[in-house]
Amino acid sequence: MGTGRPLRIGLNIPNGNGYMANGVYHWNQIAEFARLAEDVGFDSIWVADHMLFRYPNESETQSRWECWQVLAGLATVTSRVAIGPLVSCMGFRNPAHLAKIAETTDEMSNGRLVLAVGAGWHEPEFTSHGFPFDHRASRFEEGLQVVHDLLRTGRSSFSGKYIQLVDGEVAPRGPRPNQIPIICGTNGPRLLRITALLADGWNTDWIGTPDAVPPLRAEVDAACRDVGRDPATLSRSACVYIDLPSARGRFPLPRIDKRQPGPQSHDEIIENLHRYREGGLDEIMIWLDPNSLASIEEFGSILQKLDRG
Image 1: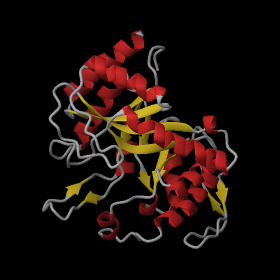
Image 2 (image 1 turned 90 degrees about the vertical axis):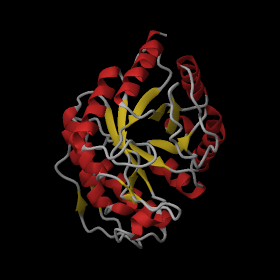
Image 3 (image 1 turned 60 degrees about the vertical axis):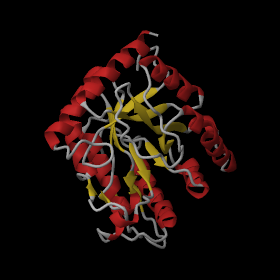
Image 4 (image 1 turned 45 degrees about the vertical axis):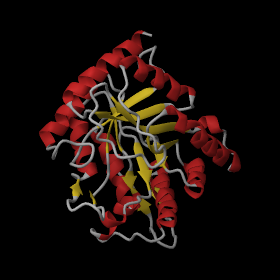
């Protein structure tokens, strides 16, 4: 990160179709997005973990490639940027298996993985693939404990209501045994508590303006204090919509901040990036509109301007 950059800036890489895409993105296109993002100076690249989206008022299913296979591929076509799922749904994989996947992907990336996890929210992708949708908070709490123990110690014999391990072990270990960062994506008080207990960082989903950050940050701070943790020890990040001057208005309304960002000049974008930092964020993961290689190059010029101070 350059000396003038106020916070780390990551890019969401398209891995399917839907609101924020232009048709289906295939592997060669995904890899090209990632390589260009690294070349122009992004700090990290991220892939959504979804099976599909189905909405009652829409006839067409929105689909995605499998998140972790895409991440493994991106680990081999990049060399500098951090990589991660945004976020890996705990309900889609056995948590011990998820720890194994994370350790392997960290090995493939030579220590660049950030494991961001969440409980999931879109019921059709659970039911269409046979994943249980009930008690998602409880399942997440147990799963996070298992993932945490396996990645931090290599072993777990966790016994809970939904998960039981007998002499669980993750081996071999990658280049950062016991050190892969764990981030929880949540805004609910119950899961904020376990985030404060076990995670290295917190992430909130899509917001459109910096004004959405302070009240969310206050809730995270309170969760840390409730469990006796110094709030400064938990990193903060957010998924952020950024409309470039040529934006096409493709973003759905965010579930947290109901305002659309709207087209912004480069100077306005830079001002807001500083405001995100002032609001307490250490990193943002952005989705650009338009979603194109040209937009990545355009944002690269913004990164250069930031780095010059």
